[in-house]
Amino acid sequence: MAMMPRFELRQGQSQSLVMTPQLQQAIKLLQMSNLELTEYVEAELERNPLLEKSENLVEKRASDSVAADRESQPAAENASNSENGDAPDLAASLSDGGDSQSNVEQLDTGLENVYADEAAADLASRQQASTEAGWSSMGQGSSAPLGEDLNFEATLSRERTLAEHLTEQLNIALTDPVSRMIGVQMIGALNETGYLTASTEQIADTLGADIQDVEMVLATVQTFDPAGIFARDLSECLAVQLKEKDRLDPVMQTLLDNLELLAKHDFSELMKRCGADRDDLTQMIEDIRDCNPRPGSAYGSEVVQPVIPDVFVREAADGSWHVELNSETLPRVLVNNQYYANVSKGTTREEDKTYLTECLTDANWLVKSLDQRARTILKVSREIVRQQDSFLVHGVQHLRPLNLKTVAEAIEMHESTVSRVTSNKYMSTSRGIFELKYFFTSAIASSEGGEAHSAEAVRQRIREMIDNEEPKKILSDDKIVELLNEIGIDIARRTVAKYREALGIPSSVQRRRQKKIFA
Image (spheres, helix red, strand yellow):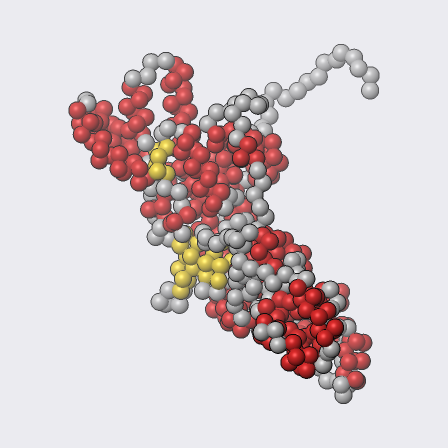
């Protein structure tokens, strides 16, 4: 195209979406974990002089009341009225489960729209990387030139925890949500040395899962790095590591079963029980010494950080479920309008007035954003509990198929909002503590047009069919598809093969050979 001057007609007015810093803040707060939120609020408390913790403000009221009475009575009354009207205590208003509507009416319409507007959510995610530096500078109070007042300790990367290392492997090795739930429970049951402190029976009873599923997940996670992790005792820990080195044979296993004799240096009895001479025994002992009896210690003393739930779910007397926010994780932040009124009276410079006005606007918006964040988490959590009632009552085998769209439509929010709420938020139930996103499972369509089937429920049906098959009538994947279609489950052959392999079940040809051998 040639470059030349020309005239063009453009529409005078057009609509465009503008993401203000306040709206960006609201979206950022929604996806923060409770620990990240605490750090962010602490930084805002240092930056904004009009923000105070509720307990600090209550203490100051008592000490400042005498001084306030000495000043003009109308000014004191106005400041008191302003304080009472614009400084709701978030933790107090939501600790009873969030049924109070008094603060909801005060929320900005723009804040409501940002959670429901898909375009705003998408734009925020694209701008998040470019605005990260701006959020950091807000927390520091003022930005310094490069090379001045740098905090080099803040740039040091923290040590990776064992829980993070194992969770990353878990998400790759296990695809179905039930197995991941079991795996997460096992990670939470590890001690500082990497040993599993809960038995498979306890984990199965807590989750309401089949003991075979728990044993299958345990066999999978014991292959994770570092070698020897998830062992239940020293003998098993050493056996897992020796198996990886291809040094575990029946003689070595006998030695591992008699570690108490090795501790007593009773080599004569060990050689007798193992059926090995002194040279062989010496070599086996050297192999054991090369193993790490504390595989989790390489990741520091604090292996698993305690998870603080954002939501508590408790069974009510009538059999329903009571869902409430954890008040300990809610920031107790108030706007000190009395301080604003006192300072603004003596302010004469225009830039000082502008600064105070900006601080007041930011403080009010932060309180409203925190309030809306808490109510949104509670709303999403209640819908998840309603959808997954069978899991809470009967166990992990009764997880219903659930996706973001279903929850979003039920509570009249956008999927992006639900996605942000369920990230890094945890729910404490009678069956353990789970991240909200773990309650979302895939679905298998019904061939009869009825309610969809949970993927985990279909996997269990496939297991039952294969467990009950006759040696002379081994079920092929095509036959399993046919039987599932007869009971109203619409599933493809490749899906059956994928589920069968995930369950660790060999093909029909391999099963036929195995049953001929043991017949």
